[in-house]
Length: 186
Image (cartoon, rainbow, N blue to C red; front, side, top):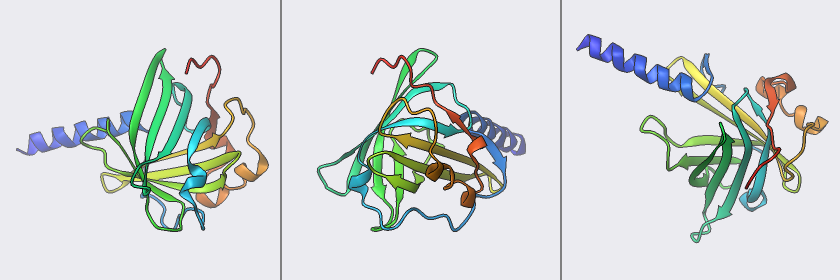
């Protein structure tokens, strides 16, 4: 029985490592989204122009659309990895009525995944947004992800107001990599 449990823990750790960069330590506390936050300002099409940690994906785009219940949003994410188009669909709900925190769940997440807390650190609804998430895994590891989103696809440089938002959260401009948005077929 002990051997089976160890194998299961090992398998879970392999899956976690494969899905995102695994770091030692718990997720930071006290990070909250912008306030006040109006989810309708976040709706529409966004292009991922920079992301924390390098990825093999390119042409990343997120679309948030208000559902008929007027309380949740459909999430439609697209990307290309190894010349295959990836599509992830899900639902986003605002975690609190006035803060920029979204509970996002995707339909294609495996059984190990649960809703993620996406924290909107910065938002200029007509130009850019900075989104952060952190998930504690196995009590003393974490996976952190962050994205710089833009309304225009081919933004290669981050402006100073975006990069200044990183420091309070233990991130710097050097943690982010540009996302290739060239030759996107959709």
